[in-house]
Length: 95
Image (cartoon, rainbow, N blue to C red; front, side):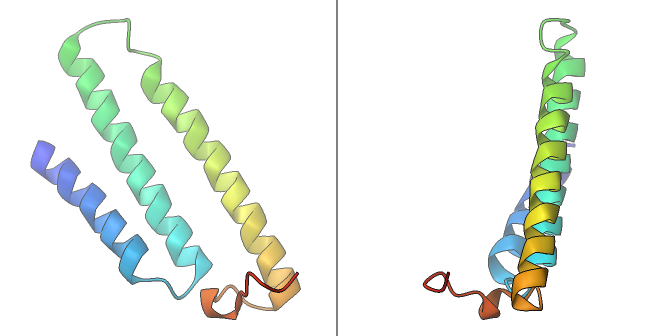
């Protein structure tokens, strides 16, 4: 199970580093990585049989939802101002 979670995380990280054409694909890779971390943290909490860490997967899920909403807001703003979500059209020197 640890190998599956590690390979899921590495695949998300590889997709984030090698597939840098669209902002939406980068956001999907980030969401996949956060889902992998949520599953790993949930399984770790279940293996410990302790209620001390029971709220940590929910806290990670809440932060993941906030990250997703900010990412979608940036995607909408970028699409409105630049016309597409391609990362090559973004220029940090332009205001």
